[in-house]
Length: 286
Length: 325
Image (cartoon, rainbow over all chains, first blue to last red):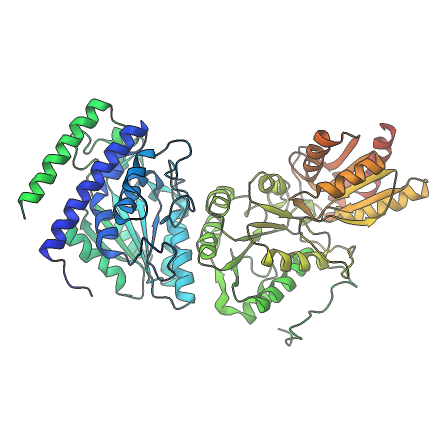
């Protein structure tokens, strides 16, 4: 097991998360459409993955031994695009082309369009199945890489997702980690009203999974939880990351209406101001 | 399990009637011996898809998913992205019937090198009835960019199509049948994806068919010959990409075309041929196929007769096409 995060690294990842949020707000505002709620909520998860945990090399996106990151809930791609750009996969300036004609930053991620994308995604429920295929191939070939799959809680409504959960349990894919963006909202309302999921961890356990529940904004706790997936426990691991949708922008937090709506210029200015204030606070705390 | 035969060549299926799924089973085994990347995925229909010999010989390259057809397509996409060549097998009603969106997004948009094998296509499934008689699969698969669609005419062609699919870089849909069909193709002729096979020359009317309707087309040509009508018979085993060169040459020479398929007229082989000819070389076309109906229980022969999927109907259509010249 890797040593715990240093204070400096923790600080760096917290700041990275806020940079990713800032990019996401700017990108979605410029595009005039997109999904800010989920993107903002998952900033720490993506900061920890790309900034620390994943074995990857932006100069060699096809490196055979890289860890695979499969984004199943493709609509939160602004936060992944921001993390890829911050890692050096492509210029940060290109982020502002999101959703525009001719852009490599498609409205939903398209494999091959942009370096660093493992799959095309958007239609919900299909990411874990593909990640399980990759994990299975890795085990067949005796490879060391891990497969991390980011999923939304809303897409747990989809039957296909549970087909993959059942399969990964049966095949004991212990190089597979499913990360659940447990923000409690989906397109038309709160998940508890649209289609209740609890007890979610119990459901995974009954299918033979190791389960970890974690505060998805605590980078230290996230790092620890995600490392469970590297331990090859003889079963797949699910990390249920409890996050606040819209995190960092007060008027977006916990409001399902921000699942798929772009802010106006005024709203964006307010949002960026709040993110700036929080960034300053993190800097001061060092 | 029979003793392993020589790795170079499997027993020829040429002399006897076999189902196209039998030819697939042989081809899969041979493809797997040739290329270690070839793997097989079954959704609880291992024996029906003739994957049992593969399972015996390559247990580590076989994945059993249970009744999970959406997973079948999406998991295979993930495996293909890791350089495997997955053959996914189920009944055509379930795959590509149930998992079309996974085939679209996870296989085709991803450019995943997955081979989708849909068996028990058409009414010749027989007693199982309408729910299990897939008549829309060619339409579903043909509409997808990047997809290749193959419907072999006999077991030997299915065997060779399987080998060709394994070597083809990209998604392929292979359409198979449950019931035995008499051999019609020549194993000495090379099989090439996208290259139609003229089985009989002719000059008055061109009959274009796939699957078991190729055999019916040959019988129809005999009937027509007795009436001094010379019919060319084209085995259009690959419906996509379409062999425009062969089809246009036949249309030009004969000036009338009949299409025949065990599939809905909407979106199938006939539609593909009609799209081409309407645009490039309009000639009279008559289509033989299922006319906006579902199947039902019965024996294969009874059902083929009921839905007009016979040599007699093809010959009738040929005469009608000729009269419209």
